[in-house]
Image (cartoon, rainbow, N blue to C red; front, top):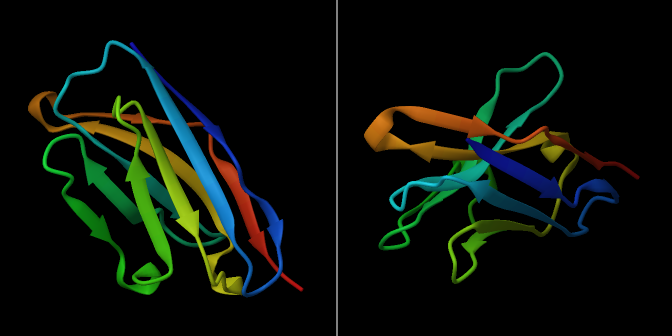
Length: 118
């Protein structure tokens, strides 16, 4: 079993910054993707960014390119999302995700609220 523990999030003014963290624990297959999805009220959940455990392959959704940066620690068990130049449209619940393509499995965190408002 895999557990994901998120931290960060909160209320920030437009143009501000926040950092999200997510630590994975349990039986983690070495090759995986860790990343962040978000879901705004009335909208579907969407990929924000994800990063592979091998070769550091990174994907960003277009709307956050150049503003958000995803990274992982040396153990590959923690993923970070540095969010800069935040906009009101970034307001959403952000979910940490760990994907294991080999077994077709996805694991999710409980979600953390990010609110961008003046």
